[in-house]
Picture 1 (cartoon, helix red, strand yellow):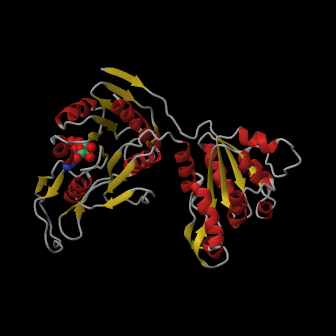
Picture 2: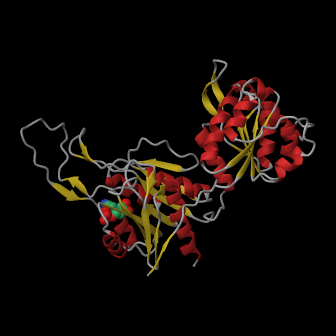
Length: 401
Ligand code: C5P
Protein backbone atom coordinates (compact mmCIF):
# COMPACT_ATOMS: atom_id res chain seq x y z
CA UNK A 1 0.00 0.00 0.00
CA UNK A 2 1.42 3.38 -1.03
CA UNK A 3 0.97 6.15 1.48
CA UNK A 4 1.37 9.85 0.72
CA UNK A 5 0.66 13.26 2.20
CA UNK A 6 -0.54 16.10 -0.03
CA UNK A 7 -0.74 19.86 0.35
CA UNK A 8 -3.89 21.96 0.18
CA UNK A 9 -4.77 23.08 -3.35
CA UNK A 10 -6.88 26.19 -3.91
CA UNK A 11 -8.29 27.08 -7.33
CA UNK A 12 -7.93 30.82 -6.75
CA UNK A 13 -4.46 30.83 -5.20
CA UNK A 14 -1.89 32.85 -7.20
CA UNK A 15 -4.48 33.84 -9.79
CA UNK A 16 -4.89 37.43 -10.87
CA UNK A 17 -8.31 39.03 -11.28
CA UNK A 18 -8.85 42.24 -13.23
CA UNK A 19 -11.96 43.65 -11.55
CA UNK A 20 -14.13 46.25 -13.25
CA UNK A 21 -16.28 48.27 -10.87
CA UNK A 22 -19.03 50.28 -12.56
CA UNK A 23 -21.45 52.92 -11.33
CA UNK A 24 -24.17 51.09 -9.45
CA UNK A 25 -25.18 51.31 -5.79
CA UNK A 26 -23.68 47.85 -5.27
CA UNK A 27 -20.21 49.33 -5.98
CA UNK A 28 -19.48 49.44 -2.24
CA UNK A 29 -19.75 45.63 -2.17
CA UNK A 30 -16.59 45.49 -4.30
CA UNK A 31 -14.59 46.05 -1.08
CA UNK A 32 -15.86 42.78 0.35
CA UNK A 33 -15.36 40.95 -2.97
CA UNK A 34 -11.75 42.13 -3.15
CA UNK A 35 -11.04 41.14 0.49
CA UNK A 36 -12.53 37.69 0.04
CA UNK A 37 -10.54 37.13 -3.17
CA UNK A 38 -7.34 38.20 -1.43
CA UNK A 39 -8.11 35.76 1.41
CA UNK A 40 -8.02 33.03 -1.25
CA UNK A 41 -4.53 34.12 -2.31
CA UNK A 42 -5.73 35.98 -5.42
CA UNK A 43 -4.27 39.31 -6.52
CA UNK A 44 -6.81 41.90 -7.62
CA UNK A 45 -6.33 44.95 -9.83
CA UNK A 46 -9.28 47.31 -10.02
CA UNK A 47 -10.50 49.46 -12.90
CA UNK A 48 -13.23 51.93 -11.96
CA UNK A 49 -15.50 53.78 -14.34
CA UNK A 50 -16.06 57.50 -13.71
CA UNK A 51 -19.61 56.74 -12.50
CA UNK A 52 -18.30 54.17 -9.99
CA UNK A 53 -16.30 56.94 -8.31
CA UNK A 54 -19.58 58.67 -7.42
CA UNK A 55 -20.47 55.67 -5.26
CA UNK A 56 -17.15 54.68 -3.71
CA UNK A 57 -13.71 56.28 -3.57
CA UNK A 58 -10.71 54.81 -5.41
CA UNK A 59 -8.84 54.97 -2.10
CA UNK A 60 -11.16 52.38 -0.50
CA UNK A 61 -10.53 49.96 -3.35
CA UNK A 62 -6.80 50.72 -3.34
CA UNK A 63 -6.63 49.86 0.36
CA UNK A 64 -8.73 46.70 -0.12
CA UNK A 65 -6.71 45.47 -3.11
CA UNK A 66 -3.30 46.76 -1.93
CA UNK A 67 -2.80 47.75 -5.56
CA UNK A 68 -3.03 50.91 -7.61
CA UNK A 69 -6.59 51.53 -8.88
CA UNK A 70 -6.88 52.40 -12.59
CA UNK A 71 -9.51 54.55 -14.21
CA UNK A 72 -8.14 56.90 -16.85
CA UNK A 73 -7.58 55.55 -20.34
CA UNK A 74 -4.96 58.17 -21.21
CA UNK A 75 -2.86 58.64 -18.07
CA UNK A 76 -1.16 55.31 -18.72
CA UNK A 77 -1.14 54.86 -22.50
CA UNK A 78 -0.50 51.10 -22.50
CA UNK A 79 -2.67 50.12 -19.48
CA UNK A 80 -5.54 48.95 -21.70
CA UNK A 81 -3.24 46.27 -23.13
CA UNK A 82 -0.93 45.37 -20.23
CA UNK A 83 -3.67 45.06 -17.62
CA UNK A 84 -5.71 42.63 -19.69
CA UNK A 85 -2.64 40.72 -20.91
CA UNK A 86 -1.59 39.97 -17.32
CA UNK A 87 -4.97 38.87 -15.91
CA UNK A 88 -6.23 35.29 -15.59
CA UNK A 89 -9.84 36.42 -15.61
CA UNK A 90 -11.88 39.63 -15.87
CA UNK A 91 -14.81 40.23 -13.53
CA UNK A 92 -17.24 43.14 -13.73
CA UNK A 93 -19.09 43.60 -10.43
CA UNK A 94 -21.35 45.43 -10.27
CA UNK A 95 -22.00 45.52 -14.02
CA UNK A 96 -24.38 48.29 -15.10
CA UNK A 97 -26.68 48.14 -18.14
CA UNK A 98 -24.45 50.84 -19.69
CA UNK A 99 -21.18 48.85 -19.46
CA UNK A 100 -22.90 45.59 -20.50
CA UNK A 101 -24.43 47.40 -23.50
CA UNK A 102 -21.08 48.87 -24.55
CA UNK A 103 -19.33 45.51 -24.16
CA UNK A 104 -21.99 43.77 -26.29
CA UNK A 105 -21.64 46.36 -29.06
CA UNK A 106 -17.85 46.59 -29.03
CA UNK A 107 -17.69 50.15 -27.76
CA UNK A 108 -14.38 50.99 -26.10
CA UNK A 109 -14.68 54.51 -24.73
CA UNK A 110 -13.07 54.10 -21.30
CA UNK A 111 -10.33 51.98 -19.72
CA UNK A 112 -12.69 49.21 -18.59
CA UNK A 113 -14.54 48.75 -21.89
CA UNK A 114 -11.22 48.91 -23.77
CA UNK A 115 -9.75 46.18 -21.53
CA UNK A 116 -12.89 44.08 -22.04
CA UNK A 117 -12.22 44.23 -25.79
CA UNK A 118 -8.51 43.49 -25.56
CA UNK A 119 -8.92 40.60 -23.09
CA UNK A 120 -8.91 37.07 -24.50
CA UNK A 121 -9.73 35.05 -21.34
CA UNK A 122 -13.00 34.38 -19.51
CA UNK A 123 -15.18 37.29 -18.42
CA UNK A 124 -17.67 37.13 -15.53
CA UNK A 125 -20.35 39.82 -15.23
CA UNK A 126 -22.54 40.45 -12.16
CA UNK A 127 -25.40 42.65 -13.40
CA UNK A 128 -26.94 45.11 -10.95
CA UNK A 129 -29.74 47.53 -11.85
CA UNK A 130 -33.41 48.42 -11.46
CA UNK A 131 -35.76 45.62 -12.56
CA UNK A 132 -37.26 47.69 -15.37
CA UNK A 133 -33.82 48.23 -16.86
CA UNK A 134 -32.98 44.53 -16.39
CA UNK A 135 -36.13 43.40 -18.15
CA UNK A 136 -35.86 45.92 -20.98
CA UNK A 137 -35.69 43.97 -24.27
CA UNK A 138 -32.74 46.06 -25.51
CA UNK A 139 -30.72 45.15 -22.42
CA UNK A 140 -31.83 41.49 -22.61
CA UNK A 141 -30.72 41.37 -26.25
CA UNK A 142 -27.25 42.68 -25.28
CA UNK A 143 -27.01 40.17 -22.43
CA UNK A 144 -28.08 37.28 -24.67
CA UNK A 145 -25.44 38.22 -27.21
CA UNK A 146 -22.66 38.32 -24.60
CA UNK A 147 -23.71 34.94 -23.19
CA UNK A 148 -23.66 33.47 -26.69
CA UNK A 149 -20.05 34.69 -26.96
CA UNK A 150 -19.08 32.79 -23.78
CA UNK A 151 -19.36 35.59 -21.22
CA UNK A 152 -20.41 34.15 -17.84
CA UNK A 153 -23.28 35.76 -15.98
CA UNK A 154 -23.83 35.55 -12.21
CA UNK A 155 -27.12 36.85 -10.84
CA UNK A 156 -28.90 39.14 -10.43
CA UNK A 157 -31.21 38.11 -7.60
CA UNK A 158 -34.82 39.02 -7.01
CA UNK A 159 -35.42 41.19 -3.97
CA UNK A 160 -35.60 44.70 -2.54
CA UNK A 161 -33.77 47.20 -4.78
CA UNK A 162 -32.03 50.43 -3.76
CA UNK A 163 -34.81 52.49 -5.38
CA UNK A 164 -37.30 50.99 -2.93
CA UNK A 165 -38.93 48.72 -5.51
CA UNK A 166 -38.96 44.93 -5.49
CA UNK A 167 -37.77 42.89 -8.45
CA UNK A 168 -34.98 41.25 -10.39
CA UNK A 169 -31.83 43.33 -10.25
CA UNK A 170 -29.92 42.91 -6.98
CA UNK A 171 -26.30 42.00 -7.49
CA UNK A 172 -25.53 38.39 -6.54
CA UNK A 173 -24.09 37.55 -3.13
CA UNK A 174 -20.32 37.86 -2.96
CA UNK A 175 -20.01 34.08 -2.21
CA UNK A 176 -21.95 33.35 -5.40
CA UNK A 177 -19.66 35.64 -7.44
CA UNK A 178 -16.56 33.96 -5.97
CA UNK A 179 -17.99 30.51 -6.69
CA UNK A 180 -18.61 31.58 -10.32
CA UNK A 181 -15.00 32.83 -10.65
CA UNK A 182 -13.75 29.54 -9.16
CA UNK A 183 -15.87 27.58 -11.61
CA UNK A 184 -14.67 29.65 -14.58
CA UNK A 185 -11.05 28.94 -13.63
CA UNK A 186 -11.57 25.22 -12.91
CA UNK A 187 -10.59 22.41 -15.21
CA UNK A 188 -13.69 20.53 -16.41
CA UNK A 189 -12.17 17.15 -15.64
CA UNK A 190 -15.46 15.62 -14.43
CA UNK A 191 -17.47 16.63 -17.50
CA UNK A 192 -18.40 13.02 -18.32
CA UNK A 193 -19.61 12.11 -14.82
CA UNK A 194 -23.04 12.19 -13.26
CA UNK A 195 -22.38 12.34 -9.53
CA UNK A 196 -24.89 11.53 -6.82
CA UNK A 197 -23.91 13.02 -3.46
CA UNK A 198 -25.69 12.43 -0.16
CA UNK A 199 -25.19 14.84 2.73
CA UNK A 200 -26.37 15.76 6.21
CA UNK A 201 -28.05 13.71 8.90
CA UNK A 202 -31.20 11.60 8.74
CA UNK A 203 -33.98 11.63 11.33
CA UNK A 204 -35.67 8.56 12.76
CA UNK A 205 -38.97 9.33 14.47
CA UNK A 206 -40.24 8.04 17.83
CA UNK A 207 -43.49 9.94 17.41
CA UNK A 208 -44.63 12.77 15.08
CA UNK A 209 -42.46 15.30 16.97
CA UNK A 210 -39.41 13.55 18.38
CA UNK A 211 -36.59 11.92 16.51
CA UNK A 212 -33.08 10.45 16.81
CA UNK A 213 -30.48 12.22 14.69
CA UNK A 214 -26.83 13.28 14.79
CA UNK A 215 -24.62 16.38 14.63
CA UNK A 216 -23.89 16.29 10.89
CA UNK A 217 -24.30 19.75 9.29
CA UNK A 218 -24.03 18.63 5.66
CA UNK A 219 -21.00 20.91 5.05
CA UNK A 220 -18.70 18.20 3.67
CA UNK A 221 -21.30 16.82 1.23
CA UNK A 222 -22.38 20.28 0.05
CA UNK A 223 -18.70 21.16 -0.56
CA UNK A 224 -18.28 17.99 -2.64
CA UNK A 225 -21.43 18.76 -4.65
CA UNK A 226 -20.22 22.32 -5.37
CA UNK A 227 -16.71 21.17 -6.32
CA UNK A 228 -18.06 18.46 -8.65
CA UNK A 229 -20.34 21.00 -10.36
CA UNK A 230 -17.45 23.45 -10.76
CA UNK A 231 -15.42 20.67 -12.39
CA UNK A 232 -18.10 20.01 -15.01
CA UNK A 233 -20.07 17.09 -13.55
CA UNK A 234 -23.83 16.79 -13.56
CA UNK A 235 -24.66 16.73 -9.85
CA UNK A 236 -27.59 15.50 -7.78
CA UNK A 237 -27.50 16.31 -4.07
CA UNK A 238 -29.70 14.28 -1.74
CA UNK A 239 -29.68 16.01 1.61
CA UNK A 240 -31.07 15.35 5.04
CA UNK A 241 -32.26 18.38 7.06
CA UNK A 242 -29.58 21.09 6.96
CA UNK A 243 -29.43 24.84 7.50
CA UNK A 244 -27.13 25.29 4.49
CA UNK A 245 -28.48 26.97 1.37
CA UNK A 246 -29.10 24.84 -1.72
CA UNK A 247 -26.17 25.10 -4.14
CA UNK A 248 -27.29 26.60 -7.47
CA UNK A 249 -27.10 24.54 -10.67
CA UNK A 250 -27.56 21.23 -8.85
CA UNK A 251 -30.59 18.95 -8.72
CA UNK A 252 -31.52 19.07 -5.03
CA UNK A 253 -33.60 16.45 -3.21
CA UNK A 254 -34.52 17.02 0.43
CA UNK A 255 -35.14 13.89 2.53
CA UNK A 256 -35.86 13.18 6.17
CA UNK A 257 -35.42 9.52 7.21
CA UNK A 258 -32.96 6.81 6.15
CA UNK A 259 -35.70 5.05 4.18
CA UNK A 260 -36.46 8.35 2.37
CA UNK A 261 -32.77 8.65 1.55
CA UNK A 262 -32.57 5.06 0.32
CA UNK A 263 -35.62 5.61 -1.92
CA UNK A 264 -34.19 8.87 -3.31
CA UNK A 265 -30.80 7.21 -3.99
CA UNK A 266 -32.56 4.32 -5.78
CA UNK A 267 -34.58 6.76 -7.87
CA UNK A 268 -31.62 8.91 -8.90
CA UNK A 269 -28.98 6.19 -9.18
CA UNK A 270 -29.68 4.42 -12.50
CA UNK A 271 -27.93 6.96 -14.71
CA UNK A 272 -25.27 8.02 -12.16
CA UNK A 273 -21.65 7.06 -12.66
CA UNK A 274 -20.46 7.91 -9.13
CA UNK A 275 -22.13 7.70 -5.69
CA UNK A 276 -20.59 9.72 -2.86
CA UNK A 277 -22.23 8.84 0.47
CA UNK A 278 -21.12 11.62 2.77
CA UNK A 279 -24.43 11.60 4.67
CA UNK A 280 -24.28 10.62 8.32
CA UNK A 281 -27.05 8.10 7.92
CA UNK A 282 -28.63 6.96 11.18
CA UNK A 283 -27.74 3.36 12.02
CA UNK A 284 -30.80 2.86 14.20
CA UNK A 285 -34.51 3.51 13.94
CA UNK A 286 -36.99 3.23 16.84
CA UNK A 287 -38.63 -0.19 16.72
CA UNK A 288 -42.00 1.52 16.74
CA UNK A 289 -43.18 4.95 15.76
CA UNK A 290 -46.11 6.16 17.88
CA UNK A 291 -48.97 7.68 15.87
CA UNK A 292 -49.43 10.37 18.51
CA UNK A 293 -47.06 12.25 20.77
CA UNK A 294 -45.78 9.93 23.51
CA UNK A 295 -46.93 11.15 26.93
CA UNK A 296 -44.43 12.16 29.56
CA UNK A 297 -43.56 9.42 32.09
CA UNK A 298 -40.84 8.72 34.65
CA UNK A 299 -39.03 6.38 32.31
CA UNK A 300 -39.18 5.45 28.64
CA UNK A 301 -37.30 2.49 27.27
CA UNK A 302 -36.52 2.68 23.58
CA UNK A 303 -36.17 -0.36 21.39
CA UNK A 304 -34.08 0.27 18.25
CA UNK A 305 -33.66 -1.64 15.00
CA UNK A 306 -30.96 -1.36 12.33
CA UNK A 307 -31.71 0.88 9.37
CA UNK A 308 -31.05 -0.40 5.84
CA UNK A 309 -27.39 0.12 4.89
CA UNK A 310 -27.64 2.14 1.67
CA UNK A 311 -24.04 1.79 0.55
CA UNK A 312 -23.88 -1.98 1.10
CA UNK A 313 -27.09 -2.45 -0.85
CA UNK A 314 -25.74 -0.51 -3.82
CA UNK A 315 -22.29 -2.14 -3.51
CA UNK A 316 -23.75 -5.60 -4.11
CA UNK A 317 -25.30 -4.68 -7.47
CA UNK A 318 -23.72 -5.79 -10.73
CA UNK A 319 -24.28 -2.51 -12.53
CA UNK A 320 -23.03 -0.32 -9.76
CA UNK A 321 -21.46 3.12 -9.92
CA UNK A 322 -18.04 4.05 -8.49
CA UNK A 323 -18.74 4.20 -4.73
CA UNK A 324 -17.16 6.57 -2.21
CA UNK A 325 -18.12 6.27 1.46
CA UNK A 326 -17.17 8.06 4.65
CA UNK A 327 -16.04 6.66 7.98
CA UNK A 328 -16.44 9.20 10.77
CA UNK A 329 -14.82 7.68 13.83
CA UNK A 330 -14.12 8.86 17.35
CA UNK A 331 -10.39 8.27 17.61
CA UNK A 332 -7.64 6.95 15.38
CA UNK A 333 -9.57 3.94 14.18
CA UNK A 334 -8.27 3.93 10.63
CA UNK A 335 -8.19 0.12 10.60
CA UNK A 336 -11.99 0.18 10.91
CA UNK A 337 -12.23 2.37 7.78
CA UNK A 338 -9.93 0.01 5.85
CA UNK A 339 -12.16 -2.90 6.85
CA UNK A 340 -15.35 -1.05 5.84
CA UNK A 341 -13.94 -0.32 2.38
CA UNK A 342 -13.83 -4.07 1.73
CA UNK A 343 -16.91 -5.16 3.68
CA UNK A 344 -19.19 -2.61 2.03
CA UNK A 345 -17.57 -3.13 -1.37
CA UNK A 346 -16.65 0.53 -1.87
CA UNK A 347 -14.02 1.91 -4.22
CA UNK A 348 -12.86 4.62 -1.85
CA UNK A 349 -13.46 5.56 1.79
CA UNK A 350 -12.72 8.83 3.52
CA UNK A 351 -11.53 8.31 7.09
CA UNK A 352 -12.29 11.14 9.42
CA UNK A 353 -11.36 11.29 13.13
CA UNK A 354 -14.08 13.63 14.39
CA UNK A 355 -12.41 14.08 17.79
CA UNK A 356 -9.43 15.93 16.24
CA UNK A 357 -9.54 19.73 16.69
CA UNK A 358 -11.02 21.47 13.64
CA UNK A 359 -12.22 18.20 12.19
CA UNK A 360 -15.65 16.65 11.67
CA UNK A 361 -19.07 18.12 12.46
CA UNK A 362 -20.15 21.74 12.26
CA UNK A 363 -16.76 23.23 11.34
CA UNK A 364 -15.54 24.46 7.95
CA UNK A 365 -12.34 22.42 8.09
CA UNK A 366 -11.56 18.73 8.09
CA UNK A 367 -8.59 16.41 8.37
CA UNK A 368 -9.06 13.12 6.52
CA UNK A 369 -7.31 10.16 4.98
CA UNK A 370 -8.42 9.10 1.49
CA UNK A 371 -8.22 5.32 1.28
CA UNK A 372 -8.69 3.23 -1.84
CA UNK A 373 -7.54 -0.23 -2.93
CA UNK A 374 -4.11 0.99 -4.00
CA UNK A 375 -3.22 4.06 -2.00
CA UNK A 376 -3.76 6.07 1.18
CA UNK A 377 -3.50 9.85 1.01
CA UNK A 378 -3.28 11.77 4.28
CA UNK A 379 -4.49 15.36 4.03
CA UNK A 380 -3.49 18.01 6.57
CA UNK A 381 -6.21 20.08 8.27
CA UNK A 382 -7.78 22.14 5.45
CA UNK A 383 -11.07 23.70 4.38
CA UNK A 384 -13.86 21.28 3.42
CA UNK A 385 -13.78 22.88 -0.06
CA UNK A 386 -10.15 21.81 -0.46
CA UNK A 387 -10.85 18.33 1.00
CA UNK A 388 -13.63 18.00 -1.60
CA UNK A 389 -11.20 18.86 -4.41
CA UNK A 390 -8.60 16.38 -3.12
CA UNK A 391 -11.22 13.58 -3.05
CA UNK A 392 -12.31 14.47 -6.59
CA UNK A 393 -8.65 14.64 -7.77
CA UNK A 394 -8.19 11.04 -6.65
CA UNK A 395 -11.51 10.06 -8.25
CA UNK A 396 -10.33 11.53 -11.58
CA UNK A 397 -7.02 9.63 -11.26
CA UNK A 398 -8.74 6.31 -10.59
CA UNK A 399 -11.38 6.78 -13.30
CA UNK A 400 -8.64 7.49 -15.87
CA UNK A 401 -7.07 4.06 -15.31
O1 C5P B 1 -20.53 1.57 8.75
P1 C5P B 1 -20.69 3.04 8.76
O2 C5P B 1 -22.08 3.48 9.02
O3 C5P B 1 -19.73 3.74 9.66
O4 C5P B 1 -20.30 3.47 7.27
C1 C5P B 1 -20.35 4.79 6.90
C2 C5P B 1 -20.68 4.93 5.43
O5 C5P B 1 -21.83 4.16 5.12
C3 C5P B 1 -21.02 6.36 5.08
O6 C5P B 1 -20.57 6.62 3.77
C4 C5P B 1 -22.53 6.41 5.19
O7 C5P B 1 -23.09 7.41 4.38
C5 C5P B 1 -22.91 5.01 4.74
N1 C5P B 1 -24.12 4.47 5.39
C6 C5P B 1 -25.13 3.98 4.62
N2 C5P B 1 -26.27 3.48 5.19
C7 C5P B 1 -26.37 3.45 6.53
C8 C5P B 1 -25.36 3.91 7.34
C9 C5P B 1 -24.23 4.43 6.74
O8 C5P B 1 -25.02 4.01 3.40
N3 C5P B 1 -27.49 2.96 7.05
